[in-house]
Picture 1 (cartoon, helix red, strand yellow):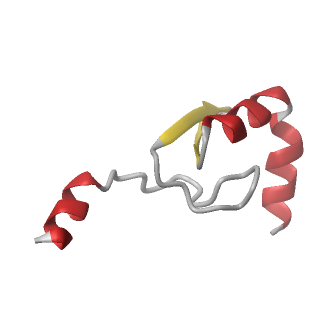
Picture 2 (picture 1 turned 90 degrees about the horizontal axis):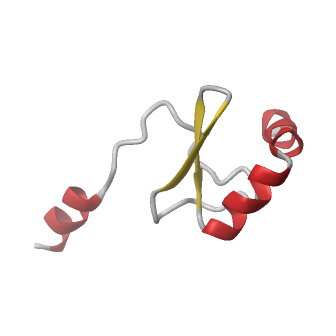
Length: 65
């Protein structure tokens, strides 16, 4: 019963980075932002706002991991 519920609610974000680029957590809310043709997922609007202020600092950190 619950398995089908969560499967239906799960969004398909294939081809997008799977971790929040700001804090590294697994996003669950579906908060997204597209920057330079790449869609990033965020765990909160706070992390998304931090990313918007200086996206390249978070993208460089993510590429090194």
